[in-house]
Length: 302
Image (cartoon, rainbow, N blue to C red; front, side):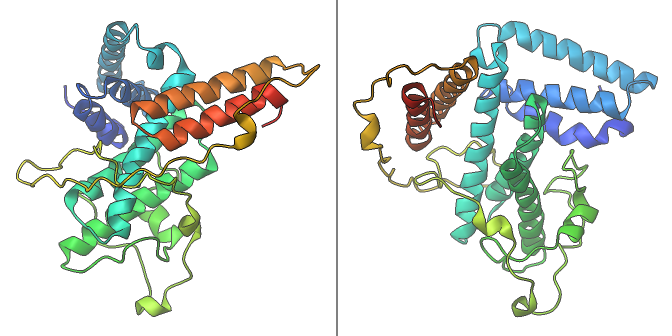
């Protein structure tokens, strides 16, 4: 069924869902859930939109039954961790390729798809400031690198001065699903004035924290954008052994410590984040979250 024009803003989230149908059904499910929720806000009254959204609801119900034994569907907190870890892995792959000066279609799509997945995280609640920054940076980088390559120019790797207004005007300040992908972006590039040396100081994207050992995961989740493109296989990076806090190695609960229900919920959240990270062999993130849970349970403090 063709997507109504009024719902054009969700077309790439639906495309991402279709691309992940078989290999990442949880990601596909939440992409469609985001598309349905956003579509209801855009237009749920006109006949063509209502018909499309009802069909999308039916598709979601079918997926929910098929994934009825999946913790990421049964518990939102696990689903949140799953989608967030996947989006960050994709972002870090693209960021690693960018900072290394390896510019290609796969990394452009990884940047752009990660930005769509940061949109999807809004189904779980308000985005963190860090994920808002990641989303904006990823969308902007995808557009910037795509247009540089299209115009025969060499992109500047890593964070560079970018003008928020130019970004907002071109792609939408709220990041709620632009109607363009890196493969049909407008001709104009993000606006810079004069020579690179005259650009404004680098934005706060240079402060994005990249966990050690997270660059260029052995298996990038990004698809090759076009069949004719040759797959780009990133070189695996040796994993740095995570540092374990020695004070937690022989931890026992402090005397008279009374944990609140909120403490137990938070500890459970850390453990589930760790479990989700291990699905992507992200040992550092798993250890970090388990240490947080252990510290909270033994001291009552984060």
